[in-house]
Image 1: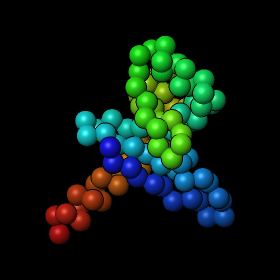
Image 2: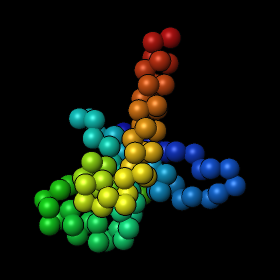
Image 3: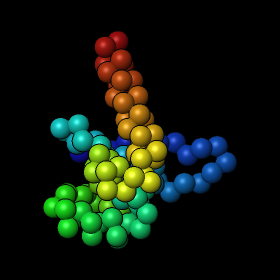
Image 4: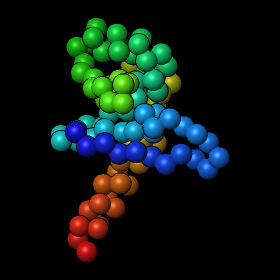
Length: 98
């Protein structure tokens, strides 16, 4: 698992774990479970669905595709994080090519 950390917006102190995104070797994007509301509730739902989650920085992270489907109110946040991953990976590829 590769972890990326987004910058805090100017003038805001957002905890590191809320700005972290996990990228699995298969391309799956893991976002903070709290993006779906109550972190514990989201984790309980993963157990019910048989969906995996990972712990990082003492918080649960779930697949963004699953979170968007099960907690539609998280869609905008998930999409922002997915775009951030795509940009970070594209930048890394460009730097590798130089």
